[in-house]
Length: 423
Image (cartoon, rainbow, N blue to C red; front, side, top):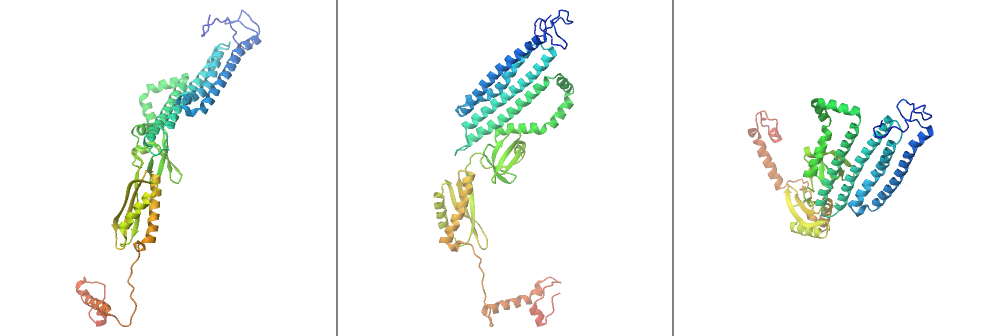
């Protein structure tokens, strides 16, 4: 007779009350002395623990060395990613083999080996996730975004980060599903759900709509790239930079160092501004309200001098234009360009401040002012006042002919002359 490991059943069956070897046991197993039974169980486990400890120490040393040389390339990154999970998985494998060679009851061996198999499967999922993360880190290191022309780097980093997150989530979900399917009860539930796949599919689809919606949105963002890492965007009226793109949401770092967390699906379903979609170069203006006597040629010459002496100007656009006027002032737009949005904001502020200082010092008549005619009081009216009063009397005498019946306006001159009131 052989057990499921195809070994003759001459080993001990560890059962309560077994003291001496006796050929008259009911299941045909040979009973050994209790000490012999313990030794038969202990020595494979001890050998497995010792071997696992040595292997774990070696792998952790390899991981530390690879971590110290992480900047050398993809090979060291992947070695570090594999070494740490392997330092856990290999000792579990040694213990599983050792337990299989012990004279424990078959049910006990199956339960222990099932636990080791689950842990080993989780270690495998952990290893794959770490390898994917290592590849992502290598790509991010090879394409840094802290350079002047970082359009390609931002595109590559966005694709690497989003696809990495999505792949990691998919691996974790598949690993957990496979681990749960090792339990017979879970397999029966799965078969029941498959039998009623229509209703279960509808319910599962409704429940998982936000999760899968964000996953699909992440895939669309990775492929079409409406946003990328370090993009300057306007979201819900807030100016900020895309700091992180995960498998479920996007983190936008606002200018005042707050963080706005936006679901991935929002960027697919809603309009937003992306100031660095194709290039980081931007145009910006500083508007000044000035007097009509402003010398525009001098203003244009001063604007060109300001731009040439400012390192934030990229040399593309430097224009001064009168874009609007009203009864008292004109609107002068100072249009400039810069390499990115941060330089543009600082350049606009500098242009505005330096132009105001220039006008104050060289052309004070160009600054806006209020105009008013001051009339001094006199006992004898001059000729202008006489003409004004005459015109008022004439208009008052004709007001009742021009007004509509029932008008409530009363001319004091008519009242003084005794004329009939209108209406």
